Each structure stands twice: as C-alpha cells, then as structure tokens.
Length: 289
Image (cartoon, rainbow, N blue to C red; front, side, top):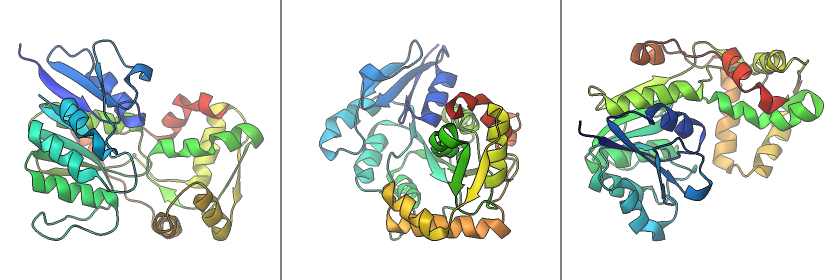
C-alpha cells in the first residue's frame, strides 16, 4: 500500500491535536505535525514532528521542509493578521496537491483575480489559497466551544463569569467535530472547491453556557452582566486590536436578537450529529474545577 503524507499545522492546538489523533495510526497515511517546539509536542506514536514558525519570514527553508512531499496540508493560521501568509501559502502550493484551511463562518466568497479582501484575515487567506492552484477546501467554522476556556480562571476562583451580552445566542462547535470533517476533507475525494459551514447542533446563550459548565463541574456558576465599556477595556488589556474589539462587540450585540445560524454539515459529512455544548462542558469539566 502506498502511503500518503498529510501535514498538520497548528498540530498542538485544540483542533490540530484532535486531527492528529484521528489520523495517527492509519496504515495508508504518514502524518507530519508542524510545530515551533517539536521537543515539547505531545504527539501520538508514529507522528513525525517538524519545526517551523509560520509567522517568521526568515524561516522559508523550514516551511519548504515542512511541506515537502505532502499530499495534503491542514492549515491553521496562528494569528489574527494575514501578514506573512502569502509566503506560507506559496510554500504549500509548491509541494501539496490539496490544502484544507480552517476559516470562519461568514467569510464572503472572493475573486482570486480581483483585489485582496479587506477585513477578516480568514478572507485574505482564502483569497491567497484560491490564487495558488492546489485543490482547496475551506472549513468555515463558527465559534469554538474551547473559547469558553477563557472563563476558566474566574470560574475556579469565584464561581462567576463577568462578561457582556449574556443573551447572545451562539452555535458553538466542538473542536473534535471540526477535526472529524478535516480528516475527511484531507483524505477523501469529493471535497475540492467546497466551503463547509460548520456549527454546533443548536444555539446556546452565554448565560446557558455558564449554567451548563456549572452542571458539569457540580457547582453553581453565576453570570454577572458586564457593561460594553468594561468589556472593551478588558479586551484591550488582552491584546485585541480595536478592529476586533468593535467587531466582536457588535456581533455579540446582534446575536442577542438574531441567533447565530445552525447547520447540519457535520452530520452530513461525518454521519454523526455534531456534539452539543453540554457534552463539550462535561468533557472539559476539569479545566473549570
């Protein structure tokens, strides 16, 4: 049997680590994990770790080495700026036949022969990938359930979450569901040119998310509504750019009355329903204890 080589960037992240686990051990695949710290990467047996920093333009030779001989590449861009992405996308295109990019729900279609899109860095990455030539699949994922881990420290300390727009209704997706779709797009035919919108199975308000986390850890966890101005200050202190702060606050305000969409794409592609936020909370309960 001839093995195919699948390269996973972001291999130690939430989605990448799940994807590596799914792919590892398959006799028809050689799995290569790209990381800035191969020595510190906790990878399954049989997965090769290679060092490359996608954000360092001086690392061009490492980029080529990481993608050399690849049949397919899973690309996660590690920052909210597209700066330097063209070099990485070009390196992938020189070596791989297929690229699966973890994008974002709501990214508009772009014209590869037109001007680069403004706004979300995901849109710029999609535009670059379209221009380079390999088969592509875009996984336009909604909000990640793992983002609620940002509340973990406060929940552990006080049993509260101080945040804004508790009524914001989100269709958060489990990282394992993104990985399951990515595994199919990387290894099966029939996904070239597809833009898949991926969400959880239902909308859950932020207040309900906190309640479900409390149920998972076996304690009462309370929501405390924060003003938009206080949230803006907190986001700025966390390093968010002004553009992302205003965009995020506007989105959370909007989905109080207009909930995020729900798709059944995960079930259609994998044969299994998308995992609920309650399931995610139970699986990650130790992080909040």
